[in-house]
Structure formats: structure tokens, C-alpha cells
Image 1: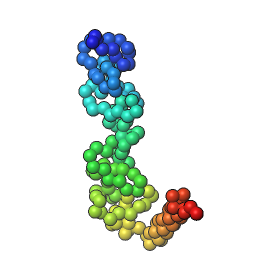
Image 2: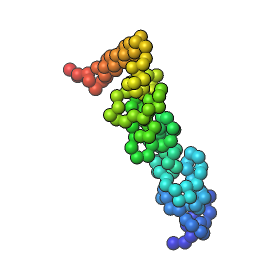
Image 3: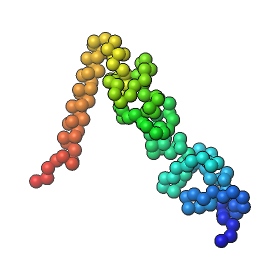
Image 4: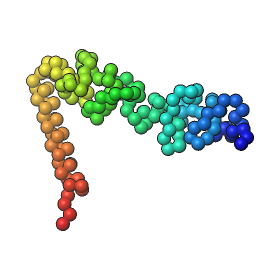
Length: 153
């Protein structure tokens, strides 16, 4: 069997060996593909033959919290085409924590609680409502024109 050879430096691994990605590595040479920090026993994620730390894997392939910028571990709240950690999902104006049961509005592509929204001037609420209606109509128009909905004769 012999002494394993490191997948990074191609030298013999005579002490602790890490086996991952179908290769052997010196502990200090088994690193995140993006930041090149060694895992040193910490969890790594594999994708397309490369190893990533949790932060970079989620940044590239998973959910990263829109507010704190960290990888969302565990439960994730998704709204407005963004992801938030459960602890970070809050009104963008008053920072009141919200959850999936909380009614909120979109303002400037961010969540706004009902209490803050209700304080907006009437004209602003009308413009927000009109822009949402326009966006919904545009989305419906796009869906109706998509090739998957056209009939072949």
C-alpha cells in the first residue's frame, strides 16, 4: 500500500492524512477552493470535485442571508427573491422581527411590517400598490407568452 501522496504538493504524507475528494492530503493542504483556508477538521462541502468551506459553499451554491451575509444554516426564510436567517428576518424600517405568519409589504425590495407601511403617506402606498399591480401584470404576460404554454397545431 505504501505512504499516501498529497493531492496538492504531491509529496508523501507521513503524519496525519486527510482523505477527501478521492485523494490524500496533508492536513494543511486540504483547503477551501475559494479562500484557501485549511479545514483543520472543520466541515467541508464538495461540489464538482472541489472542496469549499461552509461560508463559500453557501455563497456560491446555497442560501446566504440578505441581512447578515452569513450562510443560512438550518431554517431559512425566503421572500422577495432573497433568503434570510430566521433570526435576521425583520422589518427594514423598525427592525421588528417577523416570521412566516407576519403580514409584510415590499418597499424598496425589502420587507416592511404592516405597522410601518400603515404610516406611509397615502400617495406612497398608492404608488407601491400600482407598481406591484404593474409587475404582476407583466409577470402574467410573460408566463402567457412562454413556449411551454403555447399550443402546437
